[in-house]
Amino acid sequence: MHRRILVTFFAIAILFHAVQSFAQSQQVFPAVDDTWTVGLNSTTLKGDDVELSICPLAGYWIYLKFDLNVPSTSVVLDAELQMTRVSGSRPNEISLYRVDSNAWAEETLNGQNRPEPRNPDPTTALVAGATSEGGLDSWTSEELLLAVRDALEGDGVISLMVREDPDESIDVRDYNSKEATVPGIQKPILVLTTIAIPNETIASRWQVEDIGFGVKPAFEFDSTGGLHVMSMTETPGGYVKLLSAPGLAGPWSETTLDIGYFYGPGDVAVHGDEVHVAWHDHDEQNATHAVLADGGSSVTLYNIDHPGHDGWDNALAFSKDGTLHQSATYPIGFGASNSLEYGTFDGSAWDFRIVPRSGAFMYGLATTIATDRMNRPHIAYCSADDWTLAGELNYATMGESGWQLETVAGSGLRGRFPSIATDHWDRPHIAWMDIDLADVNTVHVMYGVKNGDEWEIEQIDTLDDAFLAFDGARESVSLVLDSNWRPHIAYGDETRIRYATRVSGNWAIEEVLRANADLYNGQVDLELDGEENPTIVFWQRGFATEPKIRGVSASPSPGAWMIH
Image (cartoon, rainbow, N blue to C red; front, side, top):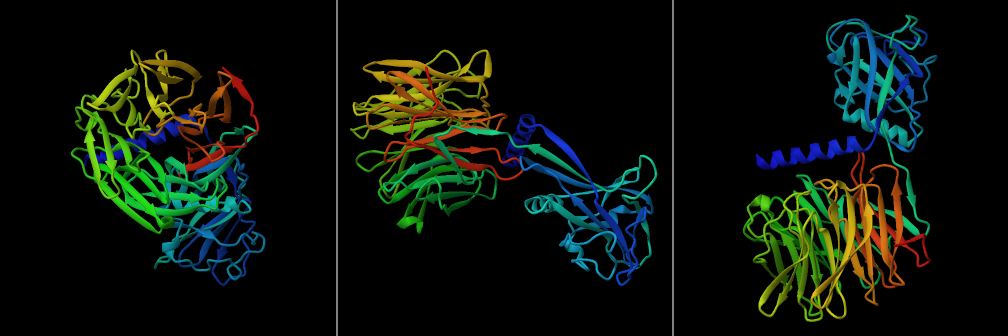
């Protein structure tokens, strides 16, 4: 019961934010052809009639054609046929069907030459039964919407047939046709609710590719330069997949890892010929780990069984000795008194434990893990227990006497979405976001490195379109170090994705993508390829379809840098 309530809440939140972000509009399309048949074997033509008739026993069927001039930059969210009934009753018995061919005209259509389906089965109706208010009958359904979208992928023309499914009685219903002459009367129309896709600007040296569908992706390169991207859907009956390709341009192959009720973000780590993937299994209430070997032909799942509803915000890192290390969250909302989790995998089993004295905090603000030359774990996490409540950026590492914890940045709304890396001297580097105290949609992108016992912290950039919520930002910052131990950072909000690195001691910032409305979900994953060119994988809103996972990669030529 509680799980169903939780899913409903998330679905409402996602829909509400989508409506907030994009302006919807209605477009009305009048019929360009309409007529009706006087019997199914008759040659009588009725294209000039001011009324259209329906009768099940007499074979009175209505045919309508619409030319849909919808811009390619719009997505159709809803479709509704409307007609004004001038006589007869019981519109709930009248069904709507799609006609296969548009090669008919009202001047020549009759009962003998009517197009397919010539006698449709009632189970194939787009809508079974109309709703009515004041003589205005309307038909709308998911099937009608899909038929409209299919027509828009072709020539933009759709033909519909309206009839009552056969019964024993003669019961004529009449509707106004497009030839109706009564002033102000509504004629047959198709009403589409649309939403404009935001315009998008891509920086010149970057190429963008569509990878697949899903949310909250993570990815990693293998030794040959191939990409492995985790894709998931976060609903009961959803999936976790691994999308693999030799390069960003594809071709992409899919391996389904599991089917059930899952949550991200997760992580991907490559070790030799194996690809390791981590995510949260909401059915089992644990972290889950998949190992893909032999090019993906062998998949092994490990449910990391641990007390409590835990295993959220998973992050992976291999140490030099081949051990897989993982950080995760046991949320305060599920009863934790200490929320940071840490585990190791020896190739066959997990040792998974709570980090003592880590404090209780929420899931959703990310954990991040790296290892050093001595195979020790370094973890960063945020101590907040709500999106916009006070919290600190904390750092944990394993010393000879056990876990050592310290605060990197405190006193405010600090430490959101940290990303950590270690350099040749075992120094931890962390990038993260702080929320502006005056405006929770404004965030400051921060960077810190520990020199000796001191953290050297600086602000890199500010973004003003952040959206912190379960369907919004998760892991909005991603940090990697190159072979010279210089930091490279990708970060984003609802309208942009940026990439920053050090140039001559200053931060050089490049705007990779920019949209004129809230298009992105504020999650990025950055990796450098074998030649240290950056690639970023992210996901964007899917409008009325599944969310889309995309990637951008940069050529080595200089971009349009902003020096900070």
